[in-house]
Image (tube, rainbow, N blue to C red; front, side):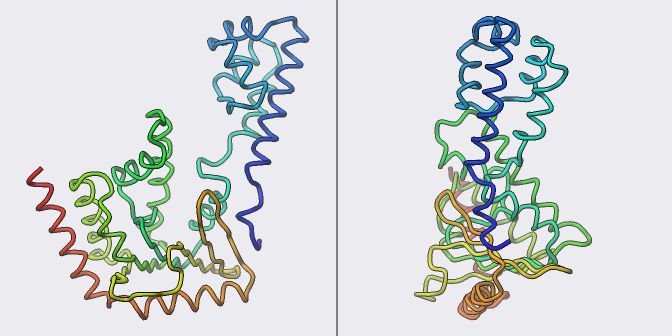
Length: 284
């Protein structure tokens, strides 16, 4: 599983789209339809069909079903969509991590700049996605937000993993979205802490240099499998299970916890930040 984050990547997804497109083109031509003619029959444009055939656009399940009806392919394209294209809502490098979260008995996480996904509110997640996808349509943003929120229930289950998070003070101070969004987000973290669902520490600015500067880190332990470490950078991630590498990552996390404020002091800081955002929200 070492470097599993580099397993099924963009290349494999593209190969699935290309195979779908090649089969679509071959079967469309077999019955003598142009792209435009097929498009009209399945209620999309001919250009849309062309984008499927060129693997530019990901096919959708409902369109695949209508293609089957039109080309009389006995469910071939819908089955292909389910097998090859109906992948995880998560990015390729994160999909396996999302699966492992549900199996973990303990999750330790360091966040240098953004509230960890498992702790995010819907409006905070929306603001994060809009910041990196300012021209995305609403459906895409809603899908991404839903995928992120769908992970959160593991922290509420009776069999939830132990969750220990270290948040750099930057996470609390960067205004993501409006003051209202931040007030709700920080209050949500507070509620999780007070309900003893999670243990959170704040790494203050005064801590100075520290391990994992600018890098996320997620450590996961399991009942019957070796622990893993996951790190993430721009549009890529690495899921690692080499014992030596995981041991080093665990040592870095121990140093982060040692440099962070105590849980009690952290709670006081987060409460103060929440009050600041609430006050700011009330004046806007």
